[in-house]
Amino acid sequence: MEKRRSNPLLSSKMPGIRFLVAGGGTGGHLFPGIAVARELEKRFSNVEILFVAGLARMESEILSRYRYDVTSIEIEGLMGRGWRKGLTVLSRVPRSLLESAQVIRRFSPHLVLGMGAYSAGPVCLAARFMKIPTAIHEQNSYPGLTNRLLSRVVDQVFISFEESRRYFKAGKIFLTGNPVRQEFFSGPRIEREESRFTVLIIGGSQGARALNRAFAEAASILKQKGRQVKVIHQTGHADYREVVADYKRRDVEGDILPFIEDMATAYKEADLVISRAGATTIFELAGLAKPSILVPYPYASHRHQEINARTLVREGGAEMILENDLTGKALSDLVAKYMDDRDALMEMGKRAAKVGRPNASSVIVDQLVKMIH
Image (tube, rainbow, N blue to C red):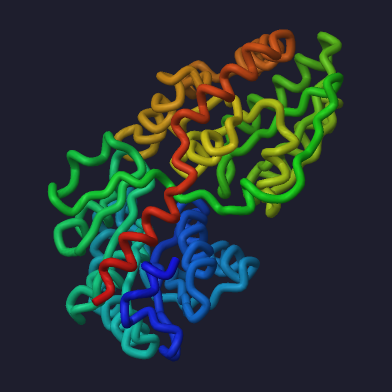
């Protein structure tokens, strides 16, 4: 710890070390940034952190729950918008660059870290033009457009998967894994009853309609076969009412929530997780040694969720069902299989743990500190 503080810029006599974290769009971009911010706060008593996100309400709500200051810039994503909307988005880039420069000038950060998603683009570009040390972190196996472009101008690139290395310029890449919030590894251990089998369904912060529907059917099949399963189901806000109605129509029960704020406890309660395969989820599962059934989002760019999932599947740490093959019966069969074979379930969790990089936040902060000069 003393060695890290030897940098004169990190002296306790300074009024504050200022880090700006840019990114958003989904929880998968925000939560790794929060994990890095928490590591910075743990390591340095005089750190100030500001998040810059887009205008989406979800981003501000998540960051306010963690009590971080957040400011927004007017920026939208480019992918999948069509050429007319794409031209409109591009025409607003100069304004978003100006807004980013104003934020940077007011906050005067020592370093800027981009966590992917479109809102990181103008912030990291403005920081680079203003000669502020800048780094990005890529969560997925196939990098998003923003990070592929930014990698040409930033000082450091942190990656979660070895597979993404080839898309970035060699010489400034660090394989770190995806940062996981520390509360996932702390807090009291939850003793699960041997007679109860708990399944956690996560469609991501924005939900997953096909997965939501398939599991409601699976829960019904399991009930018809006399299999007692406790269900914790995050639906996403858009599908919440429909899923509640579907469960009611099928006469099955579950703890159904649009968004799970205390995901750490939900993971700890679960014997088996059924989920999409975003990078954040992959590393949470691995870090907690949780067995899972992964259903990759089929429309993710370059099928990166499928590539993410295969990292766990190759190790024997997960099962995978492609969405084309997703049915209630397929899910119920796999759930029943692991209800009957707890040893196989435990082995899957152990193998998942081999993929984990629980020190990702610490490794990233080590490198960020070196960049401040």
